[in-house]
Length: 146
Image (cartoon, rainbow, N blue to C red; front, side):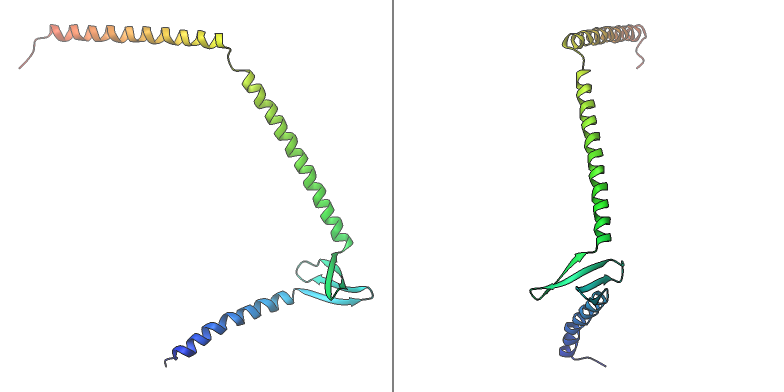
């Protein structure tokens, strides 16, 4: 059985609306409001977090419960301590980096080292030239075979 194009298009357009309603329903079930003497108590059914809500200017304004605020403040204090420790560590590393630059050789030490390297390479090249000359003499002594 073939479905007319118009009907298929209508189904495709209506399908996302059904999924959106389902997602909204899941979000709506997440929180529960209970009427209290001073307003409403909102409970997050997934986490158990509770907030005190009051109606202001036609809107429901919720404040974090006292024990949750304490948990947030504890977390903030822990993060502050961690940041302080990291800043101290960065400062120590920067000081150590300053010490490394001071251990570089002086200009005199650098020139002395460069002079030693130059002497080494000159002697090395003299050895290579001597070996090439010895090899040339050996090749000149043997007859060419053609």
